[in-house]
Picture 1 (tube, helix red, strand yellow):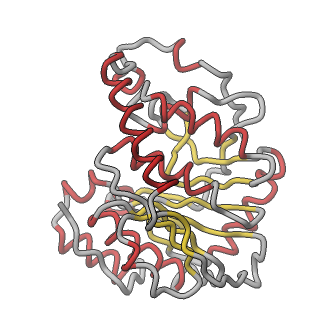
Picture 2 (cartoon, helix red, strand yellow):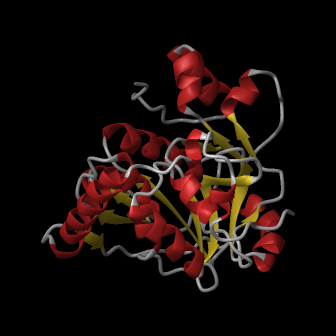
Length: 286
């Protein structure tokens, strides 16, 4: 398992990497203003915030909660597919937290806690909702999953294999090559909520600053001796690798925008349905 980088490490890499190119000061200030307005609406708006719901733990992993961001029509649609796969193939029965500007789609679902948020209107604010969501979680361990993931096998078995790594690092991500090799994939994040929140709060602060467009770059920039750490290199795969014949078994499959652009919609839907057992297919492929 690789060691985390020190805070500010991203600045030591040549700025020719577009992911590490800081945004201009006017763009940062515009983002900070939008962020303040959005968070003020979330905090003080009469219709926003957490909708209380009775929750039940999963007997196989009672300390675990799962959550996702579902901002906008497309990602709400994909999030509904992710949740369906999590319940069906993932056999996960525990609480799911969803932050969304379309609460009516999720409130009827069983064992789901909805955080109703104002529309983001900005990609980085929407990305920052994952850190906002973590402040609402009550369970000791939280697994964040991007809405464009599907779960293809029992989640409890995957979680058991990750527990030793979580005992070492309070926050875990899969390795990613953006912004640099051995950085952190922000789409699957497992957090010990007591030990890992200091990292989440550092991450959130940099996202709010607007310095970088990518929340993965923001996470890389705040890595320190306490983490993040990397998951064992198992249990996760990009759908395009399956299309390319990689054949690896994985619990969590990432359906990227690149796959959606490069492969016919019917082929993606067929693979999700027939190969991964997804019973609720998304309709948003734009």
